[in-house]
Structure formats: C-alpha cells, structure tokens
Length: 238
Image (cartoon, rainbow, N blue to C red; front, top):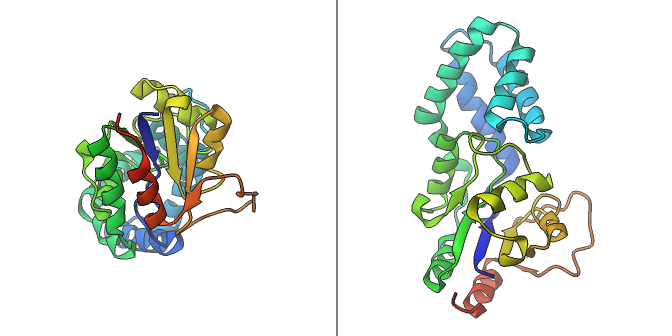
C-alpha cells in the first residue's frame, strides 16, 4: 500500500453539512437577486443538476451533466449562459464566506504531512459535485495545500459520483494505482467505505460519521482523528 485517498467534507474538513448548504445558498441567493435572477428558481435547478451528477454514468463529465440538466430544468437558454458567468463569479468572490461553517481540525493536516513524510501518494477523493474553484477553497478552509495531492476530484475532471464504483475506478486509473495499493479514509459508510468491494483497504473516521443505512461497521478499521494519526504513524515508509 503506497497511496491514501482522503474524503474532504466531514473528514479532512469537519463541518455541519446542513449549516454549510444553507449558508452557501444564502450567499448565492443574495448575489443572484442583485442581478435580477429569482433565487428559488435557480436553486431548484441547481438541485436538479446535482441529482443528475449523482446519477452520472461516465459518458460525460459531471460539469457537462450538471449544466445539461440545469438548462433543461431552468428553461431560459439565454439566461443559462448568463447564470454560468454569474456562478463562476460567485465561486471566485463570494463562496469563501461560507468558511464560517467549517470547523477545521489541525490533526487533518498533521495526518497529511505524516503520510507525505513517509512517502505516500495522496488523493483528495471528495465527491465531485463542485467546480475546481470551490473545491480548492474548501481545501484551504481545512488548512490543506493543493500540491500535497496527486489528484483532487472536481466536477470538471470526473464523470461519476460517490458511491458509484466508477468514481473510484476513474480516480485509480488517473493515478495509476490498483485498489490493493490504496487506503480510503472517510467519514461516510455508504460513500467512502464502499471501496472495500473493489479491494481497497478502508479507515472510517468516526468524528463526523455518517451511516444512513445503519450498516454494520464492526469489521471496519475506525477511530477519531487521534486514532487515525496513531494508525498513520504506525504505517511503514514507502
């Protein structure tokens, strides 16, 4: 094993998901309202686009899938081009304000640096529902550096979402690894621990664990950030 995949939200970046979503849409709504765009209509179409990404089948990028579904739901094709520009501006100028919902843990970067020092390659395997700009900002909220990761999944470079096995196969292919050469660290039993079915080792971070299906986790390596760092420190150098 020489490569570690990390989830971001709820793992390397502790946050309250519901609070984040509400804050994110509040700032977005304020910005688009100032441009004479109805926020409720926009947000409805964003959710439609998000659902389309979650069901993506690998035939196009998540970015292309999102805007295809968004446009079909929103309807006004001429306005969609304008909205693309406005949302690009939103992620550049306003999205960072949502960092107030993040609760960064210094042990996150400590885990990353300990693995780097031992020679492990790292992948930021965050569910690729956001554009590159928003993903890189969320990394910064967690105190992470882009250059520490061989791959960061975003909606521009991915054509599946978690928990589809195609998401993980695509990421593995891009970093040239087999599942047996990798460890996945995440907080979501359904979205992150499912990689065990591909043959990847797993570590369940319990600090902000999500287990919506109430699956049996008794056979999964798990613990809080402190235990995770101890586990990483016990790994051999590569």
